[in-house]
Image (tube, rainbow, N blue to C red; front, side, top):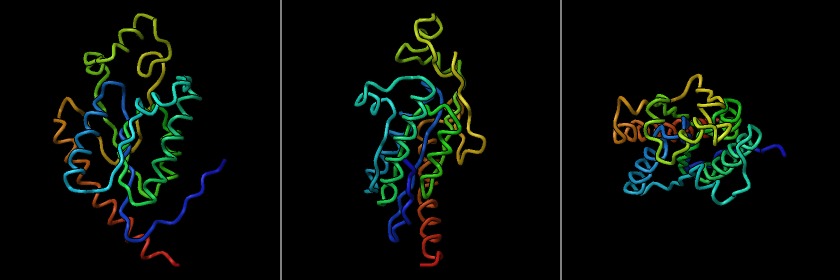
Length: 193
């Protein structure tokens, strides 16, 4: 199935903010703070968490093909919400550049946020015990250990949670959202009808 991109709806200010990084990098924590602030500002938004979506569809595996398909499905959903004026905050490991580039191609305005927390810090956080399982050989194909994470080549934002707080990271992301909406509306109004 080939995705069809519909024109942006004038007067709507949707965009897709895609947080990518290793497990334990802080993607969900930052995304939740961004969503709290968007709620306070009464901005229409939706939070798409990779782990929560996997819980709804438990048959999704962790092979490269499964991960790619998962990212593409979530990306398509994000693009449809964006089209209807929703600010989408998506937090997924999304380890492969090609998958993220596909999602970017679906979206009218895509903001890639690389939560670039070093592997050692992510392992130290290991809330779910996944790194320990991967290091002991009980979990194969774990991103960052025995499966690659391909960092974004040119993300719109680069966040290292060892250097800035969750609050600062959320503020940086929020600063990009109005600019994204304004830029997209200008593009829509200048395009031939």
